[in-house]
Length: 253
Image (cartoon, rainbow, N blue to C red; front, side):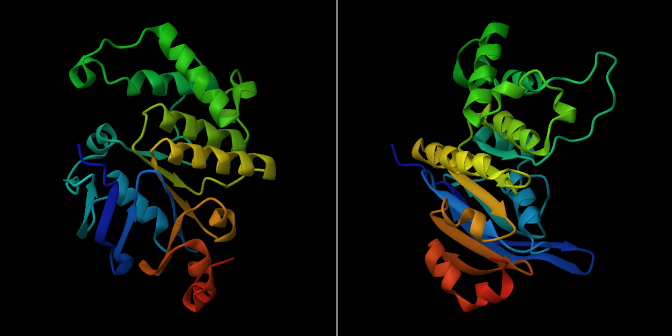
């Protein structure tokens, strides 16, 4: 059986009216590696992540995973194939008469939703007890077990970010997209996140992290792609990319 190829994105173009948000950008993210997508605000990072996740249709370009063309596929289809995105904050939802979920309940709901059931894997859906156990494992893995009973909506920013990461991991991603994952994280949690991302890569996940500056990702990424005005201006090992004069001019340290 051939080894998985990972994510390959080519020639993506996105326009917002007369504004070119992404201009022919491409990147690869291989299984077992942590790949960085770096650029200042407005460089096109989030838009490119939206295209990869299937949340935005590009004017041009392609998205392939393990050789399969997913360019025209909806986000839910890409998620079934393993492209999973962790958001910075949960989407706003109307108030529920049953109250807002706790951090634990939020992660447990993601576990239940991600259970593929018999149609995909030929096994029965997990029980409520299985979901609860898996949720506890994920909370411990991302380091927020002590916040499990806190209201997810009112959680501190760092806990909210890590809750979204736990929810993404519930889907057992082949490609994990993280957009500004270090936002609001104190030093201790930033270091723990780096270790977790390296562990996920060691397990065969292709990890793609978008960040507004070079320094947070220098120690964790195997490869960096730098965006400026929607174009990839440099790609390669972190030390080589940081030494590139174009990168020093275009990207915050």
